[in-house]
Length: 52
Length: 266
Image (tube, rainbow over all chains, first blue to last red; front, side):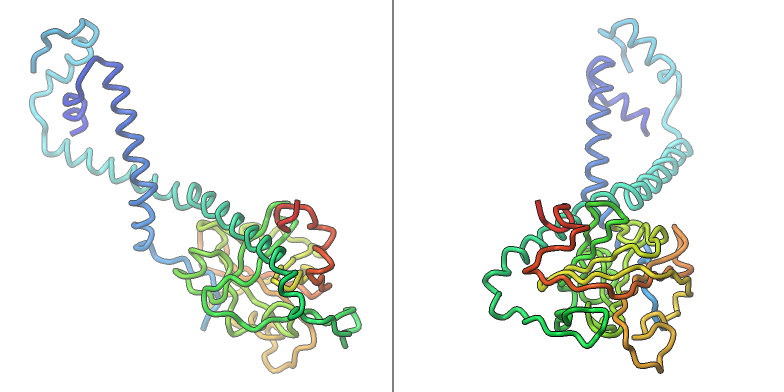
């Protein structure tokens, strides 16, 4: 899978590394901005109150 | 795959891959598992660290905006602001200004605790709903308890960690530390008295006289509840404070917090 991704990336080695870093940064940004806040709703809410 | 036109270094870098025959199913499944594991770790890092910092600074910002708003709105509201009344309480000069409980999830006060840093100020809203108040706004006021400055118990709840972790350092309070509750009318000053550890069902801490439901209150108390231990919700950590003094807005903030970002001053 990831080997395939590496093969698809065009250009010489440094271009591929640069593209990979851009890709990773884009994925991380998407995770932090949208995916994690969305996933947060499904994590059991942390109760901090005292109740009966 | 062809290596035509590639430089020799690149070719040598790619050669081992070329030897691998085809993408194997097991290999892809393995990579997916590794990816899933990394995602879970990233999520935990986001929830417990990154989002904690982001939410914390947003709430500090909201708190200082509230303080500023109140500071600026006071002159216009001056005629309606409560006239100082002699207090029957021997420890107080004037009767603290109290307020009517606001609507659910409405911000009505700011918690300022110098022990937790000069810039520690977090908004307090009505209600203790996890999704509408505690995860979003910050501290929540138990609607069944009294309002700040009233005789009885002003009880608030908040996260110990994640979502801003407003009461992260509750265990670090020492006897005599001030806990300020700023409202539109001024600053209520409480003095920290003690900690108590209870089970999540320990609602006695919310009584007007904590743990004594049948006793009529005479003191004005503040109660802070959060979870304990860290990374768990097995118990509740409870901090108590007793009323110390009332600082009407016209007289400016208490000296201890005057000029700090928490008081909205400059």
